[in-house]
Amino acid sequence: MRIGARTLKTGIAITLALAIPYFLNMQGASVLAAISAIFALQPSLKRSVKTLKDRVFANLIGGVVAIIMNLTLGNHFMFVGLAAVLLIAILNQFNLGPVIGLATVTLIVIMMSPGDNFILSASIRILATFIGVVIAFLVNTLLFPPKYEEKLYHLIDYTTSEIMKWIRASVRKNIEYSILKKDLKWVKSELDRLDVYFSLLKDESTYVNKKKRIQNLRKAVVYRQIISTTKVAYNLAKILHLHENSFNHFPEELRIQIRERLETLMSAHEQILLKFNGRVSPDEVNFISYKESLRTKLMQSFFDEASMEVEINKDYTQSNAVIHIMSSILKYEEYLLHLNTLVTSFKGNDWNPETQIDNIEHIEQ
Image 1 (cartoon, rainbow, N blue to C red):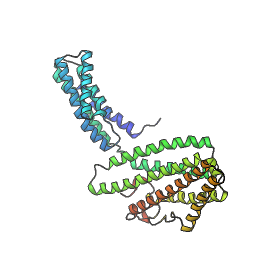
Image 2: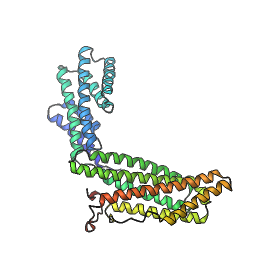
Image 3: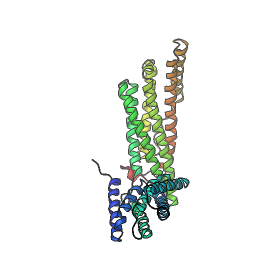
Image 4: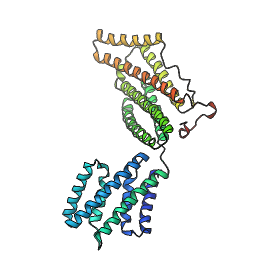
């Protein structure tokens, strides 16, 4: 069992949402304030601000609809359902689908809790939802602010390392087909997590000064290319997995050439990440580009193998496998070259060998 910052913030928000209405003599509305706080907690500052605006507006509409329906038709369960339908239609018209849940809860609580002074009671409950939303916003932005860059970098580093292990094992025929198939499904889910963290990282850069926002946008460009390169490496591992049998029947010389080229590319990939983390000078990692003679030799070997399979063995499947593997390697190389250029440009002015970074939290902005 693990209690993270978000879990702890939820508990604090609920506590405050229950306590503040109590001290304001609004005991009957404390539960609604706590429910509002739970719904309003968001993973980033940008989403918290948007949620604050949307939920305040949606709860206000829900409260108004509840008051009008109760005063005109009453609070029979049929009219409560009708009011909910009307509220949902209105919120959908304003493109407020994500906040329908809390607004509907507000409506039901108000309509099903009539008192001697219904208008006052309804107003207190509407105010309680506002209190809950504001508390969630303050807790989310002031306490334990999320550090998505740290999470994103470490997830990239770990996922990339795992992909490289599988590539190395695949080209050396040291891995079971069924095991790699299962692991590739796992890494696909990790790539989806990268996209989520990257989205949250961009959200964090919204509410900062102009100079820092420009730096954050530059950093976001680099992270986008890092993630794209990781996905290309995953695709290469997947291609080698799908065409494992074909690869194992390549001539030994071609397999050796592929292994050597992939080792060079993966070493470059590792060092580019170290460069981005501040552990390698921005001027390093210049060995990615293939010497013209070696590149020509590798390409010719690929084409010769593909042609032989078609012309001599009449095996189009094997020929297609050669082409798929070749194109995956070339695409990986292309993405690494572009990534190296971006990282070199981004880190070029920040390099200081006396202050190497041991933790991604301290990456120079």
